Image (cartoon, rainbow, N blue to C red):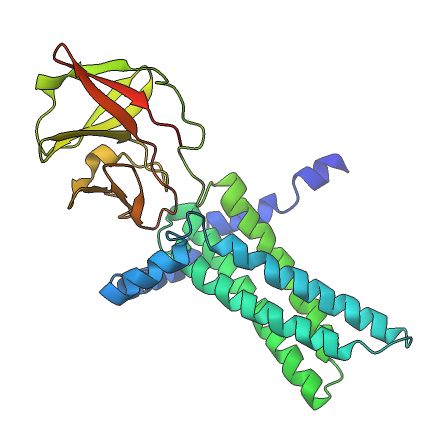
Length: 294
């Protein structure tokens, strides 16, 4: 029994992640979404949906809402079926709240998904499609309840089961593949000023990577000032030293996350996480770094 539970859904996940036909749909759809979000207005919307302004991904805030309220609706339906009380209005209200939350989850999830690739992109597409089916079932249930359809309550139950299947895929995206997980969460070191490199070896206006006591650091001399931050981008782990300088900030080359050099504040997503930075001082011609407290 333990072995079967441990492997629950593994074969199905392998089928999704290895299916080229999924990518035949996912790639062109992702290109269209990226193009839509690349406009000036789209970039503002993307920062909003990624949770850049919040310092936390927006998608998981929405996802619990439909699961909770749709579960409540099914419970209300079950209580009503006993004949002891009528909770139809409560069930309908729960469905409507869940539908609103599901729309928010869909929009924020689409923004996050636009920056995925390979296995994440394929599972994310199936995750989103499954949630869409769940949402349509719940909308149909609300309409059916108003029109007296006999199967309206069954649609709610099916919608909840479908949403839970989608949640399993979403859990794999986060906990197994690390989607939208802060890649600097486990970083540490450099608690005291530690020599990094000779000041003369740091060229102006060129982001430079250095390993300082095992810590990957991006250092740059920008407009006469020295700056240093963790080289591993918090969004997907790409090296910031391969990014470009832009108005006192560094833009990640992979997905465009933009961090202020002075303090690591995130200016544009998809990352919602501030980037760890270091105090910088020069001693006897050598640059020394110390991690700043969060």
